[in-house]
Image 1 (cartoon, rainbow, N blue to C red):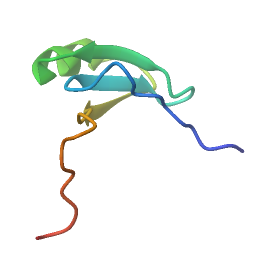
Image 2 (image 1 turned 135 degrees about the vertical axis):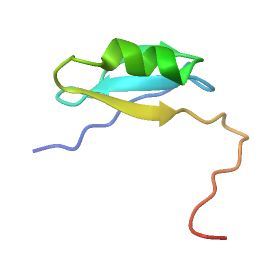
Image 3 (image 1 turned 120 degrees about the horizontal axis):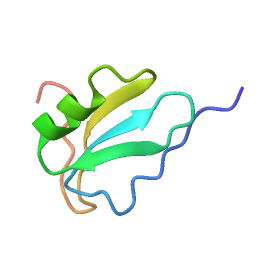
Length: 63
């Protein structure tokens, strides 16, 4: 079984939800509440979170 590789290009700065079976982005918006409301009640939809910009630092760990 191959891992799912989702291409988030073009969704920088937006909150996204993906289909857990295919890895396709099914919802995207700049407001996280909109994504959560639209994803509620749908099967196999995972709210991924915000997609960072390429030059945005990604914090890892406690530091």
